[in-house]
Figure 1: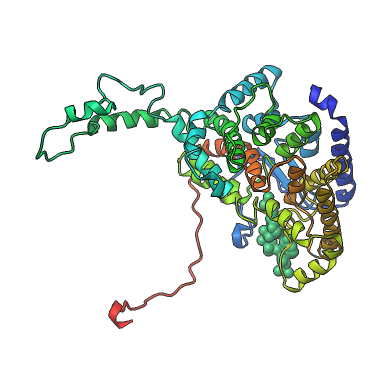
Figure 2: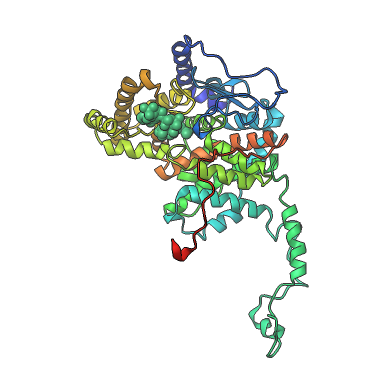
Length: 474
Ligand code: ACO
């Protein structure tokens, strides 16, 4: 058992308690598991498809399984509660990406690579040229993936060191010497075109393993470093260098807040990262896979995942939940606020799920962890917000639990957990993305081995045979 697990046994107890509760509450469910023992599936598969591709089967996968009726979440055969109780985010990422739990040596090598890839100085330098304080944090995160990509193909890197003999000097005094006196037809101060094109081919080649393990590791570490830098730049502070002595979770908190977390804070962040790492063919995973299926590369694919995750119906809900709880303002306002929502037929953020028709197992862990952090905090505002959340949960489940199978989802308590760890609200969804990079890239690596470009159809319900009317006659 690692030192961190030993120091945080109370967190393990909370997780195992949540597991027990889940087993008791879902043991009656007799619904069939939606799995196949046959690894060589015969296509096409018959399935009933609803709007938004509900029910559609797009591919097979060995990475993760969600049973919505039973409230199960499985990564590569391991129960999410066990992974939270006994594993770490690094180990879980290895499991998702490589398909098995690592040996000690394999984990050491993996950790070293991740630590190495945390240093993205050139990307951070480029980010500092943006007006990050005024930008959507997910937009910066997305741009960050392009900068990391650019970093990997950067003109000055391995294959293309500046050649001082063939380049025009940037010393201003020398420029007039390069310039013909007058009347020239071409610009004088230019790079040689043919030469540059040749070099750019080399640059692209340099994107090593563009849709494989190397790009996966680079993004896993790099996106976390970008998130930390975004947090700092938004506060008008300089980004912090990653600390190679710290775990992924501890370093993420450190780069974001500037403080090395306590073992409990580190463990809770680690558990949160594990819980957010993968979740079947959700919208952002699908977006990532669609882009990868065109044989674009991992950097572009992950950028699309970040874009899809940003929406309030998906990962963006975690920030919306906190705004909503603050808007409710007081535990005594909950009933009235919820009644109004119902009357207006509005959705409550952090509730409901396309797949879960039982309590989301991730919320089962994050709820009690939020409670634990609140109990050990003297922040009155957080205590108030947590009480509002608990009361709202009671109300929503009483009205919609039995009838519509609406329960809290992962985003309902994650924001409270993040707030207690001093993570600013604009970083909630980026933190979700940081963790999901492991699931996104694992699924891309798996899919491209038997790649087929995604290309569904739309049912055309428009008109035919219309006569074209010139613009002046319309
Ligand atoms: N509050 C109140 N009612 C809800 C909610 C909710 N949060 N979610 C669903 N319902 C109701 C709908 O009104 C609908 O009722 P009806 O049948 O009477 O019209 C029924 O449940 C089905 O809802 P849909 O929107 O059709 O469900 P869908 O599977 O398309 O959407 C979704 C799932 C997007 C997550 C939805 O539940 C929602 O919008 N929740 C709020 C946003 C949220 O928390 N998103 C985070 C999800 S977790 C994640 O992505 C990481």
